[in-house]
Image (tube, rainbow, N blue to C red):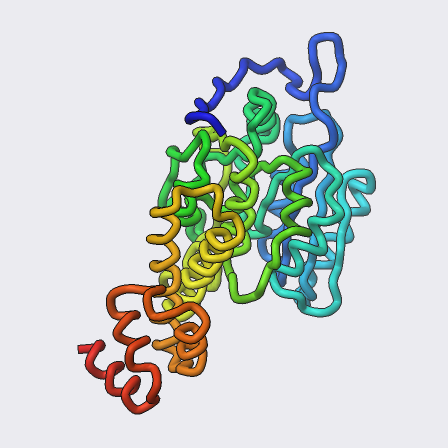
Length: 339
């Protein structure tokens, strides 16, 4: 990619955004992927916000349910009955986890563009879909568009609002700073979405499947940003939005993002400047060692020293590698480093 690309200006829309003045369809099929698991308390709000979009083009809503036991599947069956041509439900009887649910459901999406929406989030602007598609359509190399969003509490109170985002060729920015926008905020080019589902290893250790998806797609082109706040994300105990309140899960999620980085640095080494790549790799291995050290997985630390080498990390992680030949010494290091 040559130089930084500017986000194209959002074009002025007709009353019916999905058609040109002569009535010809502007966009091909659009897919919306929704993942549910025991979502009976909020999935209706999510589905209603999608199905009420001011968009007359062809679109489908694919819902992957991950073995819900609270009546979610029955609610989705009603939506399929009311919207037989738009709603497709994939009810998985065995619990799959988020990653496999996304893969199994997402592979059925046939849209030229794919929106994602978590079941506890909802769209707040009836023109959200066509505005983001306009932005995607404004540049040939646009591969993903994300929008502004707000975080709300269980009673609907606004806790934060984001009206700023990244745009242009942002692969290296995402590599440096991590995941900068939530999955429910995005629209992705459909062919790249399906390619990512098949091409990436999707190990459970990643625990940051959205970040992996965004990194993969951003390798192929530019990212656009729609500043309109058209998404509300529910902040509730157990959700990724509230993970900092549950530090165990939060640390696991953060570690997953570093493992995703490491995969991309090792697999697509030609897309980042060599010295920056080496610096990021050392940081990735250091984070991995510190995470394993906190979990007292000393054998895994020894494997890193054997397979990757002593120079693969820095700081406290290098001290840990130097002492990893003995469990008792590592336990002693643990006491010292905590002080």
